[in-house]
Image (cartoon, rainbow, N blue to C red; front, side, top):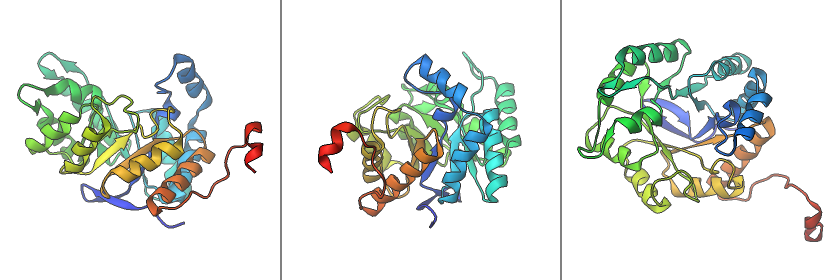
Length: 277
């Protein structure tokens, strides 16, 4: 299979499709029962099995927080395939009323480096609390990015606030990409989809979009084509999958959307669809 279409972040060639991790780590955005089921179902081998499907089909980047399960599965996938697999790690660190606890930042980023992540992009729970709407700036983020650079990783940021992207560009913040919420029904999005699309299209750096299927509220055949059709050629789509077969489905649906063709896949059959055949 040909490599998946590529873009570039901070001088690194990456696939425009990113393997997401919520359905491995239990972040269901649905119910506690669903989250507990995910965590009970997944393990290191199962996650590596899914990642291997992505890697062998031309995807070379995954995203997720600092997690022993994810870090081990990434390393297993690298060993199985002999291929490069970049990690967009979205770590957290402690915040105080005066800003980041810099010792906590250093410890967090040292762990990210030790686990061989290429990209270190602080999670929205840090970034958005540092955003100052009055000055339209992201306080302390310049120093945060510098600490990422010092460790040889590539800085970026994760946000649920589209105005953070606007502020980062306006202040020439040293980041190479932005993680942004984007889906057809506006799930977890602060503004309407057309306004978020405007921000994405006007961003000075590639935008790494997340939640294309609104955490399971949209069918892959609806959510993925919308995302691919409405972002730029330099932007990325992050998609979470639970099993190797789900990974194969979203890969084919994504390739078909980019190639403007019908996806080659077997549809789920139910009794009510017998009259359609």
